Length: 128
Image 1 (cartoon, rainbow, N blue to C red):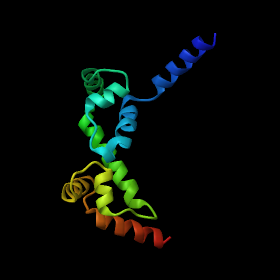
Image 2: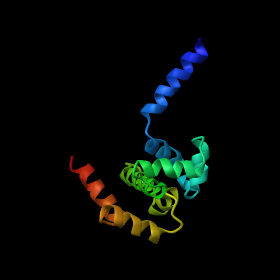
Image 3: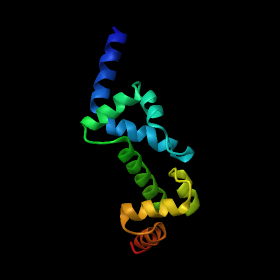
Image 4: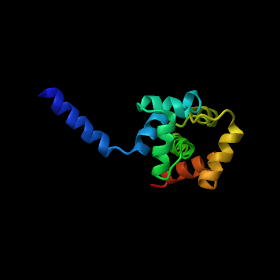
């Protein structure tokens, strides 16, 4: 009885969590060690790399776009922290190999440099 019930409940959970969310959750923690390979994330999700690519494509997404989104979200969160980490630390924690590549990507995401974003965020906090 319990096994059947547990399987039914797990099935419901899997249906409610989007593949996009699962991929983002798999990519984010691994970024500090570099960008994880699609095959690594697929294996964690219990599927082949090709199946993951196909399912993401069906949802109109790509693995690379989700990696980029995960990096963007993590960078924004780190730069908004009250006890900020250095830009070098943010660079490596988001999986970039050098600060100039991170700065270019951050500018593409937000239209400003990480330093300008952090300064505006700190000013916004202090004016409240």
